[in-house]
Image (cartoon, rainbow, N blue to C red; front, side, top):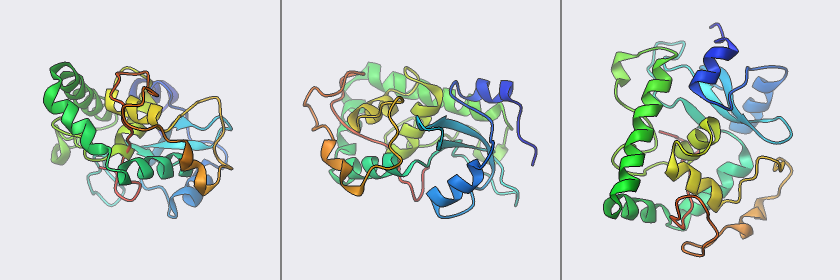
Amino acid sequence: MEYPKLDVLKKVAANATEVAGNDREVLTAQLGRDPRGLVGIGARCACGAPAVTITWPRLLDGSPFPTLFYLSLPWAVKQISRVESRGDMALFNERLATDPEYAAAHERAHASYVARRDLLEKVPEIAGKSAGGMPERVKCLHALAGYALAVGPGVCPAGDDALEMIGWDPAVCHCADSDDAGAGLAEPGSGATGGSGVGLASASGAQAQA
């Protein structure tokens, strides 16, 4: 598989960079497997390690793969998993049901996701499908956080809120952080988030970000 040029990757995601150096080896260690369909890095840790992958929408074996952005940075994956296990994902869906503006922004995020993926290849089997539960709900917070990391703030509000909940700072390296780093998670409704004020946390399953 040929990697897309940087100008194409930048249209897919503002923070995208090309696969370089030992990126594949680092991702293999992060994921515990070879990164399938890897064509770019969606975002990086402050130290330069991959944080999000960009995956071609059709794998080498011909299987369609709808998840364009896959969160890989272990610290972020663990932090978001803690948020999900705390039950906060329900708060996102409650807001989608009661806040028309938030729901509309979630639908726009879905449409943008599909359009970005189609820049790589339009795959009929997954036409109109995105990830993370969009457009109707929030199902996979890891997927939404990875999306938000890759494209930057203002595109995926649920992903932006998830990143604020875990205290993501692009200027801070988290690669050496220990497993107990989850102590810093903000509480729902604490005002710790700026963003759209959901007062939640989120991201999507590291095992199956869809």
